[in-house]
Image 1 (cartoon, rainbow, N blue to C red):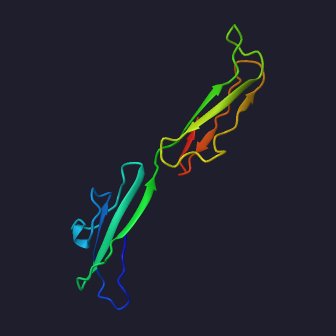
Image 2 (cartoon, rainbow, N blue to C red; image 1 turned 90 degrees about the vertical axis):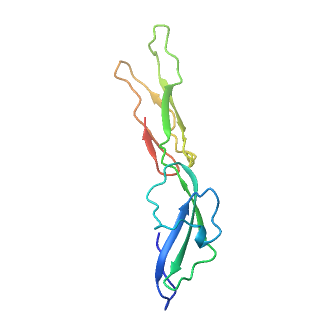
Image 3 (cartoon, rainbow, N blue to C red; image 1 turned 120 degrees about the vertical axis):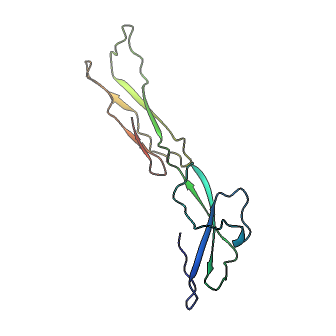
Length: 145
């Protein structure tokens, strides 16, 4: 976070901020009297930051600057499952359709069309397998099955 003073001003003396305070600050004096440091946010979700600066002539911003942002650091999930049932002996006797299911525990969600389409496996033998697929959530987190 940074601040600049008006042209011809005395310069910024300090900037204070609060991330997700229990009670929104009403003035510069309500902000923690410490350097503004926002190095990490630990939880997914919507967060609010309040900030204000004071110049070298003791003028403070009014009103406070308030912004919200969303954080989603959780990768989505993707699972593959055969939709075709094997024969009585446990072996597949024809094509096998593999369906992919995608979900997101973060706040961004899975964009429409991002979960891979069904895959049809054909052939005979033990070496037939589904090709790994990936899904990316709206925040850009990726998972491969």
